[in-house]
Length: 485
Ligand code: NAD
Image (cartoon, rainbow, N blue to C red; front, side):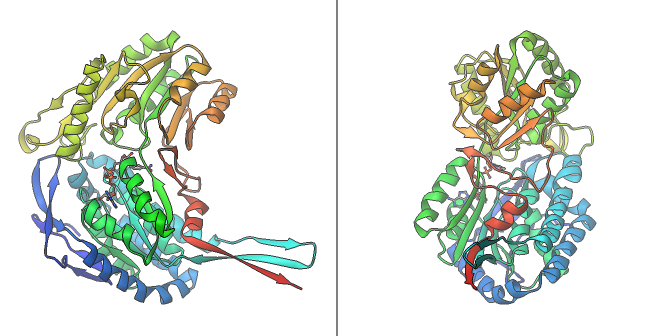
């Protein structure tokens, strides 16, 4: 399963590994070392065309296959991901820069859970029936859509790639999938696993390449009937503008600027430990990270002191070292962007309480892209730093006096993905939960995920929901049949 360096990845189309039709490749860089690990296909519309033909060929048999057979194949994929955990975790870390222990504990186990969850889910998926008083009954057929496109980002590569693919194929669709060009390796390895698990040729086609050429060719292809996209709001807006005139089904999971609301009466130790995680896990590159910390004024100074002290103890280091709490930022482009955002915060009058600089490590990682975890205060709710997504190890602190003020600050951005509320007063927590503009609310916890729950954002954080039945409904078309008797 391990790849020898430098590698040259290939697309997986119709069950075969094949190079890009135009013979063009992109470099893939390990962000912890700055070195080229290998090349990936720079695919375009010609490769997508071939992938669509393969999917078209596979669809009749796959969509007609009894669900128990589909279950067995998906479940086998889940098992093989577990069996190859070490190789997949290492590949994820080398591609993304996240600590290896995190890939081992979170990313790869979750990829396996995604397949297991939807393997079993499809066995229990049912549709509604509605009987009428005037001697008629309606039943709803939930049929696979056909060929669907799945496009995923770099921050949780295999975790989010499989979160889309598993429900799509479980529901009987054939898939054209594109991982992020920044983190393609685990998707390539997944193709090998799918072949070994007996997934029929053409059911899953993995095509590598960048967004504007390869991703957009998926969105533009007329035979691809639905697009499930996770990524930036900017790309999501563009994808929606291309797909909407073709009336494609769209699921868009986009950016966030999540508030973390801390009331004075919270369980302090649990809140502090979790807030360190919700601020800086995966170098702050999780769409659910709380990047705006709102603190009740009575405990603002206490929070600041405690939070800065704990953040300064987070070791930024080689992602392969067990002791590293913070790994590398995913790419040079993103590293520059995050540092630019920190400079903007300075220009806006922000006071950097800790961090704010790049970190230069010794040895293997001397040319890697590392940034200190950074805490900023003294900025109002309307500035760029507090309204635009940074997606790095950077958080701001703001204080509030009342519940209403906390809500106002929390809702003061165009995003609405997730929020966290810390208080022992459950009534207060429920009032905030009801009034906050957010698709996901955590009370006294963070990233506590149940795969059955609806997952997604409001406002500029997206359209539609993933997870549980929501995902299986998205990847099927409802057809109502009415019978009179
Ligand atoms: P991105 O939008 O740059 O890229 C995401 C994917 O879309 C990549 O595979 C990319 O190649 C592709 N893409 C880019 N332009 C495209 C186009 N015009 N047509 C088709 N495909 C295109 O995002 P990113 O930088 O990879 O990821 C970070 C972003 O993802 C952040 O904004 C983060 O908040 C968001 N995100 C959201 C969620 C969520 O569940 N809401 C989860 C993770 C990440």
